[in-house]
Image (tube, rainbow, N blue to C red):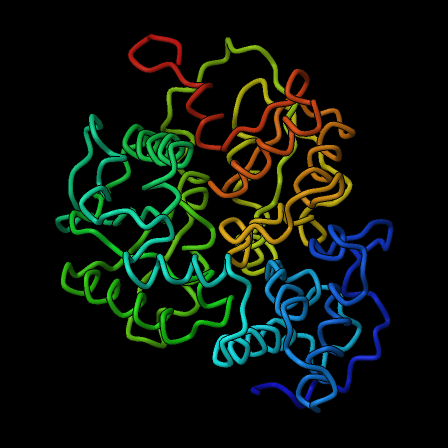
Length: 391
């Protein structure tokens, strides 16, 4: 197994499952299950024992390995700079070895099979991939400055479609030169790669790259931080050389072009930092710049924010495989309580997966009367006057 040589170097100090102030639990899987085996250090020891033929790869072992959300907290907090950057790589290699051995939780196999057969996580036909934009005055990409890439959730999930439409509306209103990709694309492959299915990831990426290159696309705006991460960091090695931006990064410098209204009621907003925009790519500023530019919006910070932010639990494919559901201490429910404790009226997110995960959590916590989850694009759209009409 690749990166196996670092497994013996972990002595389970436990920093990997904590935030920077050591005040809470910040590993989503450990938070949900409260067993050391679900923590990064526990996974390291389990992988080592498996490779040494001391344990077998049973169903519980597979569940533990695939429950990792790839949030990157362990990388940020590990006390050993000599190998901490390889922690997630080792876990991905372990999952790849389990997949090669035919040992994976049924929900993981089903999810990967849908993507293999249909090119997307929902098993939907490709002909539906542009329906999210029906009724919007958006051009198909034909040499504009940017191409807008909408991920599986933005295409096929009703809540994701609402967010995709809000983003497209904002970009249009701000005068950004962009077009949507007219040919059906494939799943971006970010979470497939994190799950260890390397061959499928490369197949998806190469198909998308072929579409992008045929259109001579140079700059891409993504709806999802997951798409942003993989297009920016993993596609170049496969021939996909593009300038990639999450939509908040473009919008942050175009807020002055939007018809923002000063007549809206005041809002207190807490931002949930997406793992793939924050820890994985060190952008904690763009989303905050967008929110801070809105008249009447006051920002508060949750105790865990920026590099210490708690993952919603949907990363690494877990949104689809659902290995962290149930119980009061799921990461999403913990995050909902934290936002309420910060005094937020709005829990702002910059990712369709985070929006869905946290909306469900707020309802489960019976907090939906006091706090609501809204995607940043929707918050901005709701603070605008278009042609003199309140939005």
